[in-house]
Image 1 (cartoon, protein in one colour):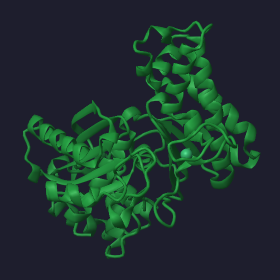
Image 2 (image 1 turned 135 degrees about the vertical axis):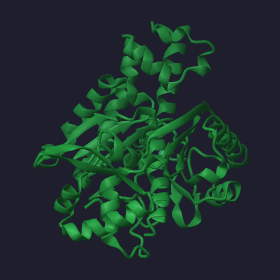
Image 3 (image 1 turned 180 degrees about the horizontal axis):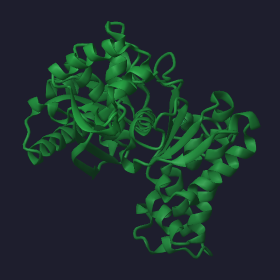
Length: 408
Ligand SMILES: [Zn+2]
């Protein structure tokens, strides 16, 4: 249990008990007692004491006296020592950049988010990310040396060995660009590069809607659509790292053209870009009364505009959102029948309108899924909101920083 680190099992890790203890402590932010550790991990009190002494010595964990009273004494709870260092989580989206600076117990110290078009290419984008990183550090009165590791999420298929994205549909100019080594050279610290939807799954599993769920799918509905597959406590990446690209499942044969070059993909029907395009079309078509008409110029209408109009009761916007939800439900039903998840978390900008979007997804997905697969399934909105991916990136960065400090 608690093997999840978002990275493949590392053969260099010798002390697996120490790893289990550290992971149980870091993923129990409310604190855990020595007795709980022994019971949950099936280890002796002596083994726990020896490992905890190691972790206390390097000041990786600390004890606080606030556990339940047993035998007249209040027990001590263990937690990660927050002041041992810092990490950064970077979310490179199709239309935004977000950075979180967190301490070692994953508490966010500072954050920055700006609109940014990923189509401007890797050099300009990563130079901007570097500016934002330095701004974040100035705000926190820290230096680059204080950052132990950085996790980075990108909206494309990441090939881990290459530290790059390969053939990304919505990241023109980024194909094979060495993102990981570029940032490593800039910041001189370890960089973990992952797909944004995968990180969304990790973030929601660790600190959001999916805490403790071992079979979790995170569906990111941003500009595009992607899925992070957490299967049996491990992120599933497939043979080359591109698993979960559900945005390019064919929904309608010969449907609308997709950014990948095919037609009728889910992303071309239900992604943020598709939602915005349908709204522009509805505004231009005569006879549609909608508050979206008040947005000038028409070309600037975004999926978030459609979402907020829908929330305010605009029928045209609601119809677009419902149809997108219906298509997403079709793709999700296929995933449910294959993977049999316990929870599906819907994230990304549009998902933040909640049930207006979730209800058509739930209805469409459950109509098409086998009864055996949906009996204990929950489909819910991401509770970390816009932070799912950047918190997932923080988790990955912490994995590097904590393991290093624990000499694992
Ligand atoms: Zn496609």
